[in-house]
Image 1 (tube, rainbow, N blue to C red):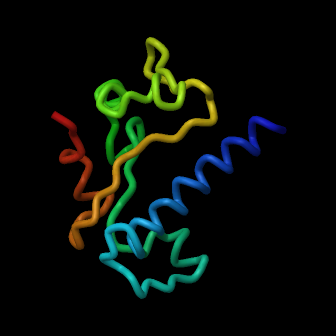
Image 2 (image 1 turned 90 degrees about the horizontal axis):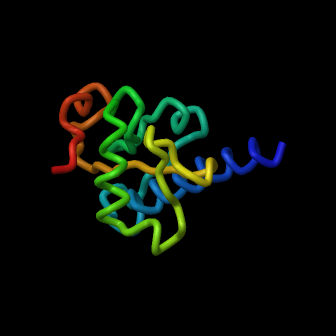
Length: 113
């Protein structure tokens, strides 16, 4: 039960951070006011793809992301040999704000080099 709750809280925080980025940090949607249904249907501008999901299927990109961010030293999050994150209730992803990007257009373009 604790693991399930931790997973949901990690995902909820990632979604909240995405909202803050859209409204405040990057500010490209400062007046956004979406309903719960619109949020679930991802009607916001920009995307938050994560390695291993359809929009960014290559798990090995997590290795580059973790190296670049220094996650082991910064917060203690590590990757297994199969690129699973540890602790298990960890979330990683990328934020994209271009008005024309969506999960279908990003399938082949979400790559860190």
